[in-house]
Image (cartoon, rainbow, N blue to C red):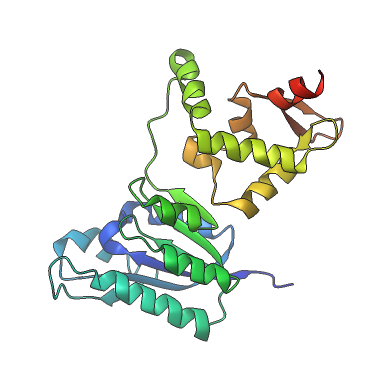
Length: 241
């Protein structure tokens, strides 16, 4: 087995906040070592000044793209070309795309088809197909955290009304549950990771267990060994009839 995964990060500087670079690199450090670091944009544009000040500090290679035609995504095309080049000429395990604007879904699916793990970073305006196609996607802008004393019920209702989230959690629990309906949290997390792009932090929770405990549609218990088990209340009720 390889000790550390090799990572290549490609930043759409026109559509990514420079202030979040620490968060991005810290997250990638969990996966391995970032060997290739590139940022794309028109570096003569004053709007990229915040990124320009960080390039040397974080050893990020700037790739110049002039605004030759207004409205044309020359930066995005250059980024895609470089990703494909790295995909076939470099020994890389993880591809990281940082952007909130253009839909890089076809690029992500191609990287996945080549056996790469794809991590995406962007703001909540990022196209859903791009977000969902990544192996993992983290939002760089957070929703305002509710006051647990006054709005916990509102938060619970918001989570429960998210049909996609509820289906994802229920399907994961059902897929790895034992005959009694209980499923180990670790197995649930693994199943979700293999199924779609998901990270509980995008919903305001540090751990997956915190997310489950915030939803009254699931019950939980701890085994003597300390393992956390989750069960769908609806399924448990149906099986007891």
